[in-house]
Amino acid sequence: MHSAIQEAHLHKHGLGLSTRPNTRNVRESYVRLQRQSRIEHIVVGDVAAFTRALAHLSIRVMLALEAVAPNRVYLVAETDHGTWPSAYFDEEANAEVEVDLLTLIATHLAAGEVAVLKEAGAEKASYVGGVALAVNANGQTAKVDLDEIYRRAEELGPHVSPDV
Image 1: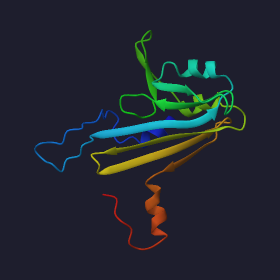
Image 2: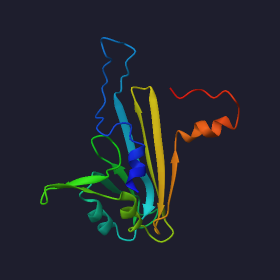
Image 3: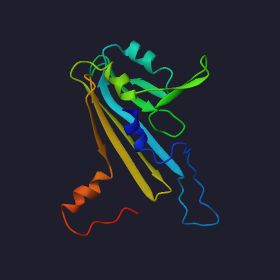
Image 4: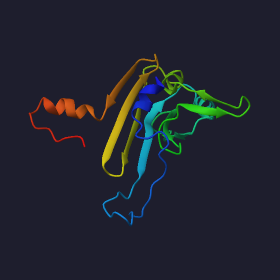
């Protein structure tokens, strides 16, 4: 399942952002690569167990206001490249361990809950991409890619602005 998240990555190792224009070419972007990934509020069965399950990943678990609902959290990816993690490094085994993030999240969702993982980003202000993945407590998934708009736009008329 995590490979669907990886499909949306602009660059696996794109890092940081720059606020200075390139002095050789003013048209160069102010941002080399900027990505953000998050899950809006979801209800999990046990917040402590969910937090422990994600502890080795670069994901921040944030508690929502208790007045809204108990066990309601939201997640923010804190990887260097802003994307959802698909692996972590196990120091004891001295090896990278792959993680199926959608399955991991699904096993902690309360009955009837659906988590929507959103990831979007831009590279040099010339490419914008994004993907949203949904998973329910039964492990069923759905995916929407921002580039799907071109296919849908063709249904509206013959001259669709190009994806450059």
